[in-house]
Length: 216
Image (cartoon, rainbow, N blue to C red; front, top):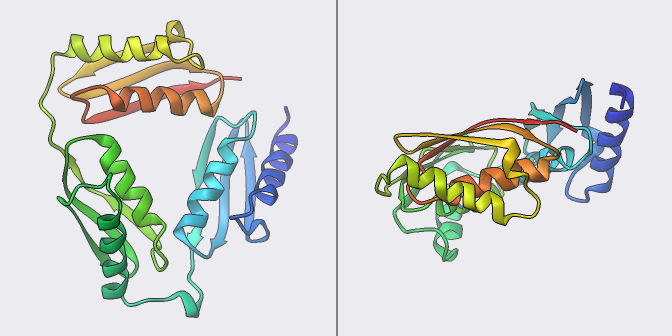
């Protein structure tokens, strides 16, 4: 697929995505790498645009350079945004009460601790949906105990083999001090995300280094 063909496909996917104003987004492509530029009206829209681009066949990387510019009617004081974020976090049963939020010029910083990565990811997703948020900085720390590296590697390998969408033999796993490094080749962004999710779900994982290559 040529760069022009890929660009057209990404543009059509953005047009297809109802949560995105595609008219405000410029798409550039370079050998599978996609860059999104322009302005959007919310952080949620910025995130949705990147996810839409990743769904397109032939995309190997997405550089999301979209800038969030709130309309005057959508602007809120930082105190109001923080209150709304805290309320949203509190109403989500998957988010522990140990996670806090601060807001500066619309930028939300999440702090505190969580026992599992999915709790931290849920907090980030929920906070990003709050009106008035223009960006997120997730500084939540994981508190789980460190298992033996061999146990982590074994758990992830078994998860890869259980997942019908993954070719476990094409993936490599290295572990050190709670950090998992994934490398190898996957055939789509869906497979890429499935591999990352499986690694994060393993007990004791505090960080995942993504060195996977999407290779169509």
